[in-house]
Amino acid sequence: MTVGTRPETRRADQLREARHPVYVDRTLRLGTFSTNLSGGCAISTIDGVLEADWGQTTALAAMGDAMEFEALVPVGRWRGFGGPTNFNGAGFECFTWAAGIASATERAGLFVTSHVPTIHPVMAAKQAATIDHISGGRLALNVVTGWHAPEIEMFGAELLPHDERYAVGQEWVDIIVRLWTAEEPFSYDGKYFRVTEASIAPRPLQAPHPVLMNAGSSGAGRHFGARNCDVLFASSDLAQQSPEAMRVKVDDLKRLAREEYGREVQVWTNAYVVQEDTEAEARQFLDYYVNQRGDWEAVDNLVTGMGINSQSFAPETLEAMKFHFIAGWAGYPIVGTKEQITDTLVELSTTGGLDGIVLSWPRYLQDMARFQEETHPLLVQAGVR
Image (cartoon, rainbow, N blue to C red; front, side, top):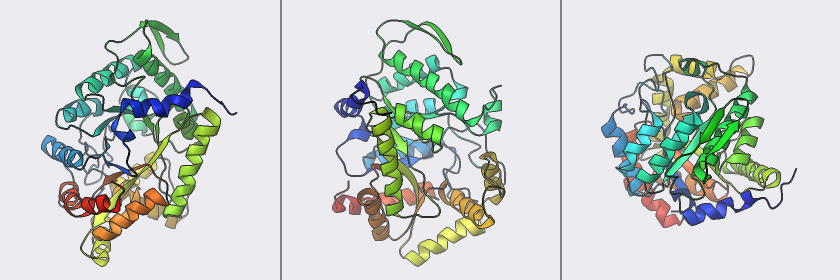
């Protein structure tokens, strides 16, 4: 059903007026992904993978801030995936991480990734508003309904059926947005949450409320994001990893938000960067840290937790998924020289239609520093930054 001229149609304009970093006037917005967790996005035993160390995570934030990245996006994780690396087993909780990083940065948008079942919406709204003040209006909330059962069970909660998680998430978001915007206390009596005479003060600096993000890719997830969020994620397609294939996904998400909910949204994706002096060297290193030094036990646990198995996918497809999870959390592969990386990012923006990309690197500190020195200036020259 087409919503027409509901008030939500003004949301994108309101955000531009609020001047959150993701709404700067750039062709391509960039960010970092999972700098708060051990391993980052690379499930590998190579030297140089990210450690859960405050000095390392603040150094990465400083590099992103210096390049005027629009987004620093942490991953919400409560336990690791076993294997020799116990991938993502150590890390920093996202709300407190963002509050700390706010004082170490000046420009970048600070995302908080929050699992709905792990925090009450009144607490989430209050903490997010506090971070928005600490950061001078740079907070964004990345809403995750949860998928990894052992994590959710740590909180004494049950991992609900897939679509019901989004029904819970809808009540959660409804309460948070109302807390951020209501001038008077209110009560809410839902199926999953009940609040009585709820209010917070001060409200966030961003008006009418902070940026919301979601990365759901299922039918329920796509509708949840299109209805509620300002930044949506389009996942990389293993079968067709091309800017043209990405454009189809981007257009589909934007059409859904516009036609079903009367909203304009940004669409981003995640990508991993492998940069060397030659393409051959880059592909050789990719093979080394994935096939030779990858933690295949941890990635087996990860994909099993996601419900990905040989009953659902052909063996070669399943192995390709595992490869890209080890390489960089199943992101879009950007592999080659600084010129090739620049060209790929430009194509994902122009041909692919993406508004933004969060990046990761296998040896996060070393490789991101090289990107800052060699590749980012080429993006500026190309006119997308």
